[in-house]
Each structure stands twice: as C-alpha cells, then as structure tokens.
Image (cartoon, rainbow, N blue to C red):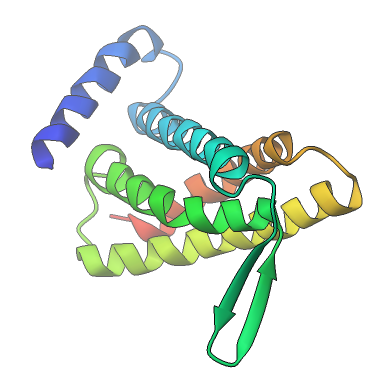
Length: 162
C-alpha cells in the first residue's frame, strides 16, 4: 500500500509543479486526493442510486424493528463506508504524511470529522431533495462542495496535526 501511495504522490507532485507559486503543496495534495475521492463518491452514489437501489425504497428488518430508507439516503449509506476508508488512506499516506499521531487515533479523529460531514450530508439531502425537490445527484454534489472546507480544516488541525 505504501508503494501505491508513493506512486500517487509522485503523480500529484508532478502535476503540482506549475501551481507551486500559487498553492502550498499540502493544499494541492489535499485537493487532488479529496477531489479524486469526491469524484469516486459521486460516481458510486450515481451508480448505487440508479442501478443498485434503483430509485426504490429500501426496507431493513432488524430484530424487532423495521426501517425504511428513501433511495437517496440508502445510496448514501452504501457509499459512505467505501469513501470513508479511501479518504482516510489518501489523507494519511499522501496528504498529511508528517503527522506523528498513532494510526488508530488518527482513524478515530478522522471518523469524528467525517461524522460531522455525514450529518451535514444527511440533513442537506433531506432538505434539498425532500423540501426543495432538487434531484438527488446534484444535491449530493452541492452538499459535498460545502463540506470540503469543514473537512480540510478538521483534518489538518485535528486529525493529522503534527
């Protein structure tokens, strides 16, 4: 996995060279990794919403309870764990490599920041899709763009601090 991180880092740093006068390396790496993970999230969300969940309600039967998820929320629940792990890995091994915190502590902090973003995503999707009647995929994109700032500040100064 370290070898893959090194390859990704070399590619990002190669692309970075014309921008080095304008953007700090760490912000550029964060943008590249976060942008890649965000695009992965959008693609997985689109595929999940349209082809896995198929615009249908999802019923979960848990012990004594049943739960019904709307298709856009079910898609979010399916995609979330995947992009959580890819995002952590990219941040830890490509973007914020100078952090001396133990990996388990970083993961716990990362999950906390991501939980805040998940709440923003959940309530944002509820608002935009169910109240304002926007389409789910553009709603997800708009909310994601908003959470980028929350993520960067949280990851830099809390999760992967030096």
